[in-house]
Image 1: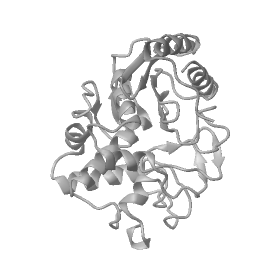
Image 2: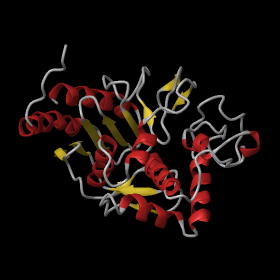
Image 3: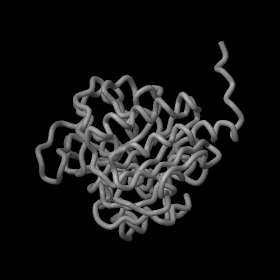
Amino acid sequence: MPAPARPDRAARAVGLAAALTAVDAWPVPHAAAVVVDSEGELAVRGDTSTPRPLASVTKPLTAAAVLASAAAGHLDLDEPAGPTAAEGATVRHLLAHTAGLGFDAGSRTIPPGTRRTYGNWAYEVLGDLVAAREGRPFPAVLRDRVTGPLGMTTTVLEGSPAWGAEASAEDLGRFVRELLAPRALGPDVHAALTTPAYPDLAGVLPGFGRQRPNPWTLGLERRGAKDPHWGGPLPPDTVGHFGRSGSLIWAAPGPGLGLATLSGRDFDAWAADGWPALAAALVAAG
């Protein structure tokens, strides 16, 4: 049976804008949200132009820069890399949180490819590697290869490539749109950001517990069949990422919708409850 037809874009935007008012009830100081499709913004709520800390939503931006640098020939995704390189870890493993590194630099390691071990260390290794290969600071790589081409004018990286960026919800919406339909970053980067890598590995999804399996792409979490999960009813091929600062992005190719939201309040029960509810409202409206 064919999928039901979507309403025209203008009518769809009206319904999504109504659903987006749910963010007004979040107990946060700076609720801001942008809903996009492959053509651009569909609905906005709150102050979407002021940049705020992204925390770990920095990682997908860093992953995109690493992948773009690889596409330009500065490194190979399958070359040995990182502290566990002698055990078989590659750039690909680092991007997918499967290099066996602990959360922070110097913490305990395990053999690569055995478990999804989410953390900051792998992305800091990647930032240093790309900076060395391109002969310039990683923030410059990020600007020239990702945020500049996407028109993300408020986005700045100061500090760790795992958690040190600030951006507005509008800017994040531009990145999410790219996850729905590749334009500036190209099809190879898009495919790597949206295709599962080592999908059968188990691991802990921060804030939501152990997941078996815990699929990711090369830079983003994949919804899969995880439960509990921030995505609620979003389909399995949805990709996204959230940050401790209360930031969240996701792109769902089935309904052709994406969300970028900032809050100004650290992740807690409010987000674990509010994010799935908002996803359900947006899917129902769109």
